Length: 265
Image 1 (cartoon, rainbow, N blue to C red):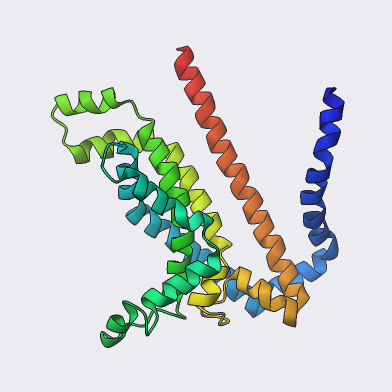
Image 2: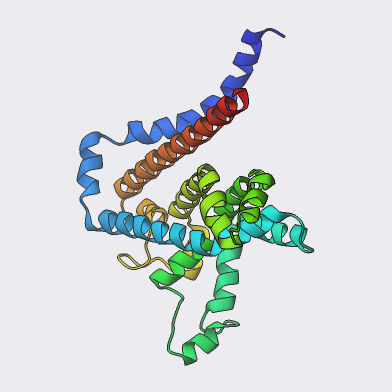
């Protein structure tokens, strides 16, 4: 089979992906887009999505880095179990994740009833939005960070230990600087996944404009109330997703070039 034949065989899938995205942009004029962009509902949903996804990324950095470092060791007893548990949210239907969070932290949930006694309510709040986003997006950071940590030459750590560095100093001065590419790409993917989260959020956090209504939730309501709102937010998410992929691919390309140059030297 010739190269031209293979190129022709790629057209069905490429067109299937491209045409719906192109239709969104052709369906919305620049005037309608800019006019809808100034609506309070759109601004609120955009701001909430950007803020919560940023908080989610920071929280994931804090609680996900130790897990990633542990997975990179590959020599502890329950490695496969922990690794599978981290992967689970990526294959779990988001609606199931939302129900699980509600059963755990809802008012009548496993831990929610104790939180309610303490005067803490999580469901249908901004905290619930962040928790839903973290549950489904944290694995992207953990897996990327674990790969970055595991790729570091153990001899560098051993040399630092022989020079008197403790584990924290080795992690801070060697592990983090040498794995920054993986950490950054994982963070970007986590942020993008959090930005587009829908299923778990609508069940656990609800869909309250100005409080828990993120961009995906506003798109859902927009189809019933105002199609322009849905189209505008959909275009914004597509653009952000496209930029995210460009950034991640650029980071990975930079890492590949750097590794190649290092090997040649």
